[in-house]
Image (cartoon, rainbow, N blue to C red; front, side, top):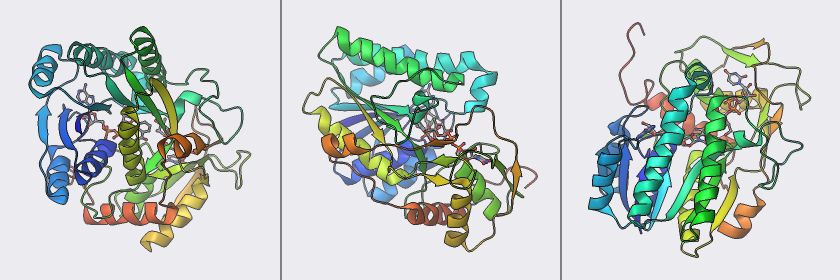
Length: 344
Ligand code: NAD
Ligand code: UFG
């Protein structure tokens, strides 16, 4: 297949592009590199031994996007990763988030429709479930609203995709709701490279283990969970990438509109993660218990049965592999794709 990938230089995008290439698909990437580096794609093509077509462009730039799609279409499928994703930042600069994520999606859908490329897979998030009524979470659970603008952009985009498909049955749309992607490709050549101080647990833990950060703050130990700390469904990024391959294969059946959770179905607490990471890295991860983080929920994990039944997809890698591969990436690339920041 010929696959158009927005945001393909980013963390999940780069791992997905690699799996697409390995499976024999042709890939066209558009990314404005606002949260990534072209180096990730260079490494992907090296690992795959195959090339991609890359455009450094912003999906909100309709003229440019039109030029790219005119030149490269038809596509058998589009995978739409491009978005801003920092929850805290979205609270301070909401307009930028709505403009980039929702506005960018409008432009993309307009241009793709004009070229009759109406098969799309979209990166959604478990954040749309808000505070779930129970766990594990199924796709038919309510999506009552989010606690931050980032989450709202995902909910809004889900609604846009739903309405667009309803109005024009030629669209085939699969929304993938990711749980907590972590880890890296087993080669240690590509991985997550957060800008500044990481917000998410695993990149923070890895930077403590490598000595870039002093100590982890554990946000709350009084939740009604196994040990009082927050529980999440961590999923290896390569399993997640493979979920996208199954999704584009599903598009061939012309499924209309579908939603799938991509998670493992298992939850781990913050303290369990620290222990698993210490074992994988043979390093200590010093931590201190701090107050709860605003907007956090106690526990969240997926019921992944629908993806298993309808996509034939199941996460294969466990927490050991996730921590091992993250540590391999972090120790080979202590500063990600770049150089040490000034002062380090
Ligand atoms: P990322 O920041 O590493 O990748 C996103 C990519 O999109 C980056 O390379 C960035 O440069 C690009 N981009 C952003 N805005 C753009 C624009 N206007 N035009 C062109 N390129 C643009 O993030 P990621 O973790 O790989 O996430 C990929 C997708 O998955 C995002 O939509 C994110 O919201 C979603 N998601 C991520 C997580 C997670 O925990 N990582 C969880 C659920 C959902
Ligand atoms: N945590 C800490 N210390 C930290 C960071 C996190 O104790 O320094 C805890 C959190 O309180 C939570 C758990 O670790 O209990 C996981 O937190 P993350 O920030 O790694 O992940 P979240 O589940 O809060 O959110 C992430 C993304 C969201 C996405 C969601 C579901 O940030 O955008 O996963 O996919 F929507």
